[in-house]
Amino acid sequence: MDILTSLDNGSSYSSSKLQMIIGAWVMSDAFRRRKVSIDNGDVSEDDYTKQSIYSLLYAMYRSIGEVKSETGEPYEFTFNTWGYAWPEGWGAPPTTATDPQRFGKNAYTGLLGFAPVRERVAKAGGKVHVVELGCGTGAGAHHISKYVLPDCTYNAVDMQKAAIETCNRRFVPELGGRLKAIHGDVTKVEIGEGQADIVVICETHITEHAGVVTDEDKRFFDVVRRTLKPGGYLCWGNAIPDATWQPCFDQLASIGMPVREVRDVTAEAILARDQDKARVEAYVEQCLKKFHGFKIPVVGKKKRREAELALKNFYRHPGTNLYDTMVNGTDTYRVVMAEKV
Ligand SMILES: C[S@@+](CC[C@H](N)C(=O)[O-])C[C@H]1O[C@@H](n2cnc3c(N)ncnc32)[C@H](O)[C@@H]1O
Image (cartoon, rainbow, N blue to C red; front, top):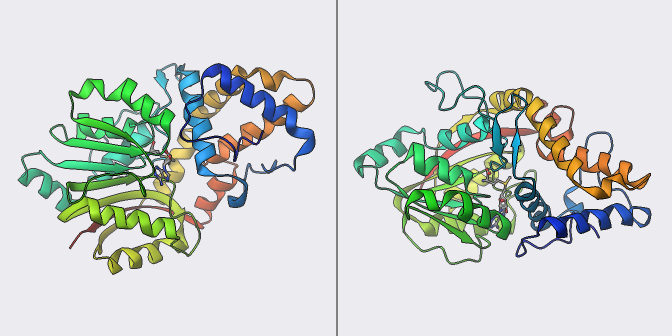
């Protein structure tokens, strides 16, 4: 069993199934080459698929359920977002200093901070339609619909069945029909044309390859354009290879979506990872403790260490490869607004 490549985004694994999957991964150790660097948690692009990794993560978040942050605040891990500390100069922060998921909430709030976007929302009396591509559990969709755009309607799409189930369990019921969760690959599922005032993309796993826009990225951007009304806005934030931003901007311009504004929040994203260190460590510990497979003598301990490093790298935790790539400028976190002309 290779948990990095063989899980299915159309499945929603139960806690007992997850125990079996982790147990099989631990036991298969002797026959496999190690894919997780034990120096910094790095996993090469060719050694995992996003279908498998997120399938595992969302099933795990659900299975772990409510936990306590390092300061004792209870929460369910639903923002699968690095996010950033609220930049000085952007006004009052939208979150409290002890909210365990404040950096993700900041990231979602920050997407809608551009003046032309706020003007469009005000002109519509708040009644705008938002479509999010790669919404994960819908935690950000819920945050925007409840606090940032309390009169909007919102369709949230993700390819992971377990994430969409979490959205339907935790977030959809509270919003009285304004939030709809859709399961599917953004580049394949029917989303509806020319309906959205705003398309939101928050740390969706695309545009990851340095210096190139892949075919999938192009299809993604085509969906953005098709989904927006004329004059509508794409609000997109992520930490990706710095060399990939300009090719993406060129691609967007070539399909009639010029980029109007770019904000760099890399320094604040690094700060967020530093300030989130204790919470991430507490969470990873609570996760690993839950899986019996890691108690298997010898191999269990070894695989526990690999799982710990891979998870922390995934969270861009201080000391990991993905943290270092932000510090040395290989990856930059930007918040971007493009307009459909
Ligand atoms: C790092 S997570 C971020 C999730 C969410 N935006 C958040 O901030 O919590 C990346 C998400 O992108 C989704 N994703 C990547 N490619 C996708 C695609 N082609 N169609 C739908 N979802 C996709 C993954 O399933 C995953 O949930």
